Image (cartoon, rainbow, N blue to C red; front, side):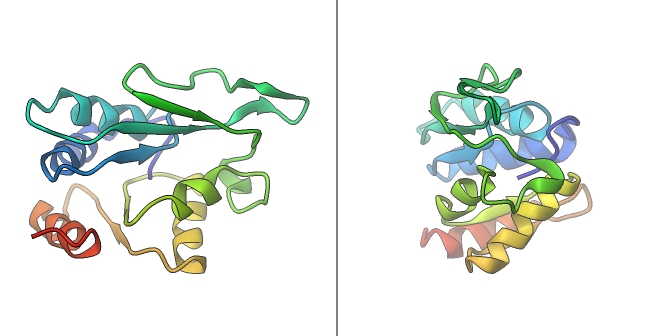
Length: 154
């Protein structure tokens, strides 16, 4: 989970590579920013890996059949379209795909972001999904230990 506008590639790319190396699937909101950066790193991994999944918002309350512009990014391998238009400051609203993102995740890595990321972190607490915050000062080994534990990997 992270910014939909800024890529924060210095922190997103290592996380994408780590998740791929662990053989896990990557689930994002399927858009730009961190979602694109982590997906690019994940799909660039040359070993065995899972699938890059994007949970897509619709264009708007009056256009639920069309994906929001900019979705999915070009690295998403499996797009899941929703009828849910809200995100950002409305990320905990019942009409936000963030509920699906969090409830479909075994663990969440929260990368730098804004109101939408904060709402996703709030939802991890509501639904008791393991979460770790990650920034450029975070040790990647801590994230790996967290993911191995949360995903029951050796």
